[in-house]
Image (cartoon, rainbow, N blue to C red; front, side):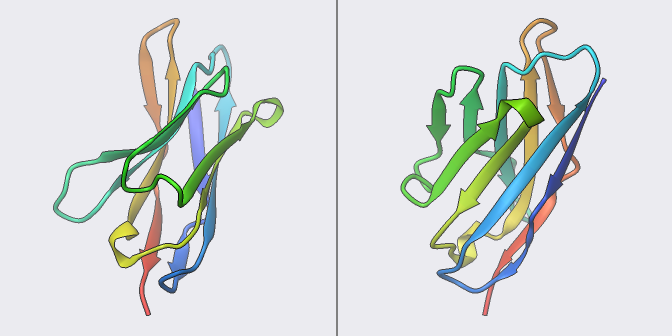
Length: 117
C-alpha cells in the first residue's frame, strides 16, 4: 500500500506564493506519475499538474506560467510551487501517485489552500 501525505497549505494573500509537498511512503510500489489535483467547493476535482518518472511535466492551462511541479526521487516527494496566487486558486489540493504496474491511482487526503485578503 501507498500513503501520501501533503503539507504546505494555508492562507495566503492574492499575489502571494505557497509551496506544497507530498511524500509517498509504503512498500512495493513504483512511481510512474505523481501529480496534483484540486477541488473547489461544488466543483469536480481537476488536474493541476503532473510529473512522470522521466520528469515530463503537464500543466492545466489555468496554472501555466504560475505553478511549477518538481520531484525528489530519492525522497519519493513531489512539490508544487505556486506563485501569483489568485482567489480562484482556492481549493483543496490533492496529491496523486500512479503505479503503472498495477494500474492503480493513489490519493492523499488533501491540503487546503485559501487565497484571500
